[in-house]
Length: 105
Image (cartoon, rainbow, N blue to C red; front, side, top):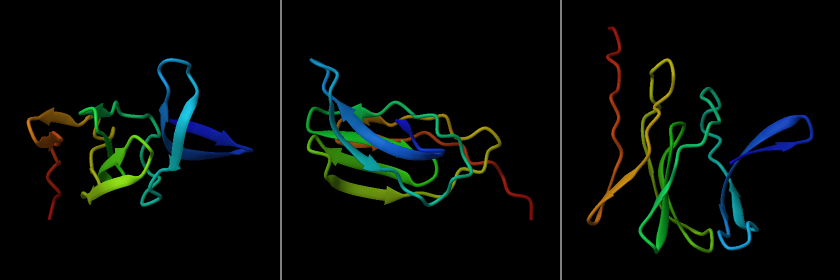
C-alpha cells in the first residue's frame, strides 16, 4: 500500500484486519528500483502465507505476523507500462506470468 511520509512517498507492504480495518503490520517495500509505478498488485494467500509480486524486486512470501518467509528476486520487467501481474497459487506452486520484451542487441 502506498503511504505518504511528509512530502516524500514511501512504499509499504501491509496487512489489514478484515474484521475491524486496523493495520496488523506494515513493512518497507524493497528499494531496488523506483522507476516503476507504486500501484499495488493484488496479493494471494493460502491461509498460511501472503504472496506478493513486486515488479521492482520479485516475489516475496510473508507469514501473517509480517515476517518474511522467503523471497525470490527476479529481473526488472522492461516493459513501458510495468508488469501488471499478480501471483497465482496452483497446488504447492506460486506462479507469476511475465512476458519480458526482447532487448535489441
